[in-house]
Image 1 (cartoon, helix red, strand yellow):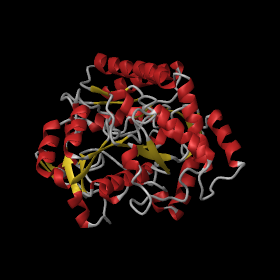
Image 2 (tube, helix red, strand yellow):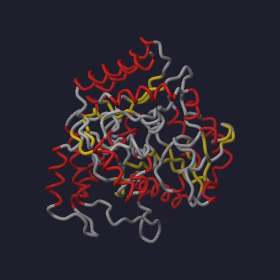
Image 3 (cartoon, helix red, strand yellow):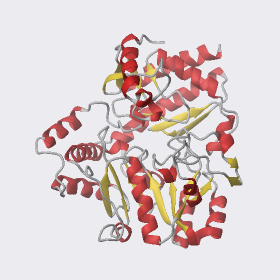
Image 4 (spheres, helix red, strand yellow):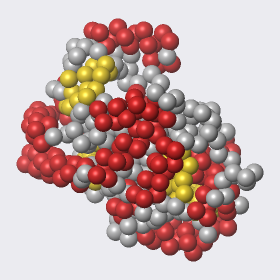
Length: 435
């Protein structure tokens, strides 16, 4: 374990004033090993004891260019000189919205908010408002934020609490959620069109929306099978159901136009956050004008004091201009493919059964002999072996999430040299764990 004398001292203080010493449940490890980060630059972070890591967590996805990117920081610093929040529209806000409409296929109108949770919450409300229906379809293993309606059968849910695949049971995440909430859900497995078709056929008159992550951002980046998303698009069209893509992770990461561009399917509404701000808190939801135009005017509620604030808009504009003016994501994908194929070779050469998963910019792997296409298939994954590899890497300066469900994220600052260094340490880790 890396030295953590200073980190432990800070975390001991945190435990006195922050619940579990953190501001998000997912950040907590235990009282004696939870990390305390001091700074980040590019593709690296340093903890309070100055231990250095090549970072593949990237704040769980927001960092698309690199930590503390000078171009983004300078744009924000300049913008905040003029103030940040005015309870009014700004030209900067309009410029960012125009850029989003230009870059995202099928995007016609949008609203800004602050977090991915807010974006999915509002998208679901809009879908209910325009359809007059209340229930929605959620896919097992997908995480759509921390509001009550979506905290069921996520990536964090125990597989043995989900019921039978043919008759899923909502597996609630934590207490404090009203018991009746789960009655608004229809749960389905990912990558199973027949299950979706049957549910819609039997219940379409009560279903407002189908909310899906186009690929599983919290299940190792598992991607949709060929034709699956297009089939869902037609199914929603045929039954007046609003198709919502949760692109909080895939937006401005898979492609400049997100999953819409990568997979060639246009939903009715998409939600965005994370990579849109390179670490600054900014989010958006939007899609067809005929749907988004129903917001306001006494019809569908949406509000937020800090939505489209000056710092977040400046960050988003800088990120979008960088992505648009240079092949950041294409170049990143090439380096990501080197990482992915390199890890695949290491595991293959050592004789470890595995499956490489996800897009090169948001990838992962599972230790399994059984192909995985949805969350229930993780029952065949060897958590202990995977976690041991990640622990070795962490102790040797490469930080990917300890849990295989969270993908490895890349950013523009992951150079060829850093990828090569990662692969060398990965090989050492796999050999050490196997032996």
